[in-house]
Image 1: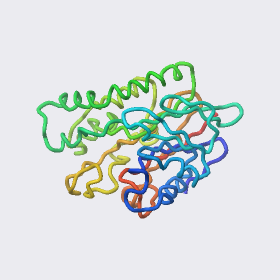
Image 2 (image 1 turned 180 degrees about the horizontal axis):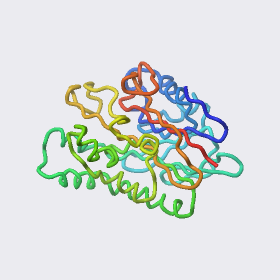
Image 3 (image 1 turned 90 degrees about the horizontal axis):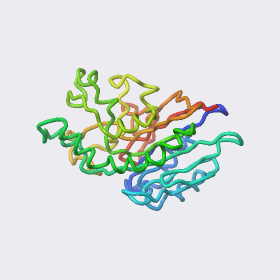
Image 4 (image 1 turned 90 degrees about the vertical axis):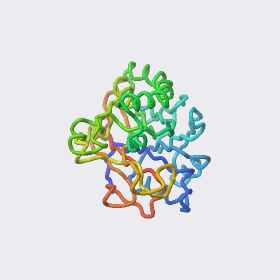
Length: 286
């Protein structure tokens, strides 16, 4: 169980899988994941009409993000009041003097380039990266156009969601030498774009060693064919759900993966209701 004093809040990124009930569990089980992490703010993907019900279970405010590519997949749930809405997010009132802007994205899932790497369906790494750019870079850039002026104005900004693409901070030379990620170093374009915008990857700030802390969020149900491989042995495990931040007074002090087992997660809910593990970050704010 995570404990937070008054000047800290917990932000969670969680793809809840087709409304949170696709695996035959009640929506309360998805709420249990959020409660266990003591998340104050949750960016939900694949809410598909259940975000307001989930917010009611938690006693939170709710804003549904109606933006491409998956219209109304994303919602922001918050125990803090919503002061303002944007195309891809909200401004939240932390207290009378402080606010934070929270944005949520659910980028295109297919084609999923790590499967192409697994299947050796390429001759040069750049082919894979070019396909990744064609698949989701424009979606990300549209959101960054809204986010960038806020960063430049010195606002506190948070960006979460299911990016459906790994991070260049994970597919590193060091991890390749350790035999991770098919022995490849890959400069995945979306994470590079976010970094270039001035935002930091909170999980990697807390856990910079990818070999010791891979932080895999995909997938908690290998072999079930829920958006992934039909056979468990063919699944590619990776970190594709992120919490990014920029701005003054935001200091990530801990990060946790919430999932189905102690082997793969820091906090466990069983049965786990999604094919994505959640990631939760506790921030100090001043």
